Amino acid sequence: METNKVYYELTASAFDWAIADGKIIKAWGFNHQLPGPVLRAKKGDRLVIKVKNELDEPTVIHWHGIRLPASMDGTGEVQKPIQPGETFEYRFVVPDAGTFWYHSHLNETVQMERGMYGALIVEEDTGLLTDADRVLMIDDMKLNRDNSFKRGNFISNWVERHDGRQGDTLLINGEENPVIDMHAGQTERWRFINSSSARYFKLNLDGKAFKMIGTDGGLLEQPLEVTQVLLTPGERVDILAGPFTEGENFALESLPYDRVTILKAKREPFAKVQVGPMKPSLALIPEVLRKIEPLAPVHAAATRKIRLSVDPSLKHIIDFQVNGGMHTMDKPVYVGDLQVWEIFNSSLMDHPFHLHGFFFQVLEENGKVPGYLAWKDTINLPPRSKAKIAWMPDNRPGMWMYHCHILEHHEAGMMANFEVTDPGKGEAFAGQDHHHCKG
Image (cartoon, rainbow, N blue to C red; front, side, top):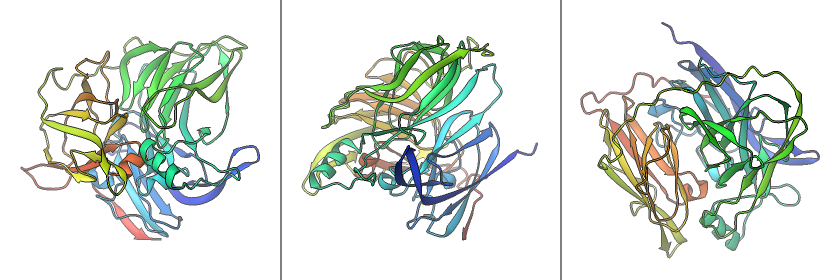
């Protein structure tokens, strides 16, 4: 059966963008939008995305959370950067339903700060039906009074190296203080994507309970009722919001989370929710959303140990390292060999660990089994903590990476490449078709 093809064109450029009435920034982004357009496909579709670069510097696009061929992952290790004036065509099948996103993976601390990101939603037919489906991309920006992007001095640059860049201009979908209007009596699906450089977003809806139904790799096995949930940079969470009562008005906000930074965390509102007149609900929420098979026994022995550390440096004051090296190369893994990785954060600050191109299951966090099974590509490691994850390298050989998704920590060295290799074949995955041309 022929795979359905879905075509998109994205043009990266600089443009003026109003984040509020009369508040104009010089954004960088896709198709003159911030965030870029929401790309939509159905599970199993083949996406063909032509990216044209009209910036004054090169870029590449990473498809965060998509299990695609290595050559399509959008990093400098697998692709020549798209130079100004050039076009690159990404082609890949989307094998999983869920909330994903795309973003620059070159000079990210500048390009993503200015708006080089967008959502990628992959749908499938399930028994889940909601009254609305919203994508909510979380970001912040560090702006001067004239709305230009702040450039730091020695001290503020050092703080940014330590903390990651956090700004006071808080955005949902490229807008300050937006209003979310919804009807009383209805239940909506809200897909949150944390696209910020370094912000930890502790979602709170005025203490109201909501149901978490999905994480990085799609739906959970069943809805989980909570009153707050933490999203680190790169992470996604799908929730069911509502039903609420007519006339309710409350803040969609982030509660303080201490990730051991120099600048202290505070409670911050990102949007307002206004509940209008009652409307009948069509929502249908199954008790079981899907089945997730465990990849490995909880107490499976680690096949690899990874240490994230922050160490003194004569040159930079502090260095961000993986296994004692910066921007390092880890050992290869083999197709079909179950991976059980123990990740130890020996530093005194949090780090969100992100694995490119594959989903993992969390077996243990500090020796404790998580309360539910989920597919993840990003996990937070608090200070002096350990996590054990399991994942399976399928037949997509090539160069991959893992890194801290605080962009400044990644840039400062906290990342590693590794190769997935098939010793029996030594040939590339069949889906690695691409086209690179001058514009």
